[in-house]
Length: 310
Length: 310
Image (cartoon, rainbow over all chains, first blue to last red; front, top):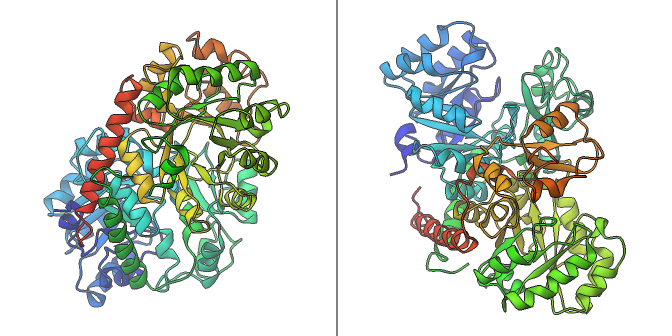
């Protein structure tokens, strides 16, 4: 039995990443309705809006969904308490040590996966009692660990030290990436950039088109020597940040003008290297069904080699 | 039929990377004898020594082997002419445009794969008439392209635009990595760091032990804004280079003292992120046989999902 399916209750082990402001009920419910696991973000810090989005999910889908709690970004334990009192049964934690969150979440009967960028963090999370890990390779978009390790290496490195289930994140946009992640030990995948570009994603068409237009070298890893490190689309603004080395403090001030206003130079458009694999805006259902079909086709092709061929 | 096997004549589609000074007959012949494809380096620039190593291979193994021609590093066409007149049937080119090399190599009946870090370079190579590509992800060791793209993303991105056979390089140290690469579209894998750490590798025990001791975050990507970019083991010297941003011109002056003298601070010990996956020094035959067995076991596990499972 696939443990990610057992833990999430979804039809497919395909999770939508919790992008700030973007991962709300419109996108997450489309993912759930198509058989994946939609996740509602709370990293925007808009506590009341996120609570409302979580409540809205029940009206939009009968399928299970999850919530992300980015520990370092939470002002207080209001969101934690809200989740513990809600019917939510699956939480991903990220950005900080989950140790203090585990006990209340587990007491509320909630499954907890923590997002990890290194083996060291993975071991701490397992010791703290997480049920599984979101294994985040450096090729993924958004907020990143400054010590870059690729998804391919990180999945294998973590599997060497623990047997908890892994959801692979970073570098995956379809069934090829999903099959590669499973071959390396994952039991599920998380896709962010792919779902940002989906028809049901609430972002401006310019942002989706920028993802479609980007090549595999179309993102930059920024702010390596400070915090937070991010991976974002290559634009005039991000090229200037890369050149300077440091990210100005107002970098995210106008993020909503980029996400929803379509001004791609207003802030930084977070995205992973998979932008180079995404050729068109598609409905969530098509993305998920094509991913699953391609995954199974590759499983068949791999299975044909099991007898000793190549 | 696996095209990498057809092109190389090896028993397994496992290629040993052409590490300067290290990829000589002792290591390459062990790889060939174990069923992989050993490759003799010429990037050291020691033309006469490399010619002697190529001649020596015939005494050490009856199996086919290859030679690497790093175009930008070749002082003249002496090595190219030597290879064209030799019985060598498989060449990898790297570090520069292979366009001018293709015609003489093909005229000599030699199969040519070029090592590429981006889709753009891959398309140029295919247009120039290469038989296949070594697809080099950023997690690999040694000389790198400053625009980092992970092996997982790069394999998929290149497969979107061309159907030539791909040998995946970077992030692969065993059968898990090999299976993941095949799932993403590769028909062969190249391993560098893993073979540097092998029992038959000519390097000093300290270098092998440094690879064994390294974690998955144990390498640094250096000299991003200059040339050449490299990935090397994290040491006092490489940490200082990372901090400064630029690599001093004498960085490689004492490379032989590191490789063969065991002074890990004498220069920079090139290695990939797979250093974090390598737990012990093993003979080449064990590395290759375990890789093949694990690859086929994973193919079996993947095949069991082909009917619709996860």
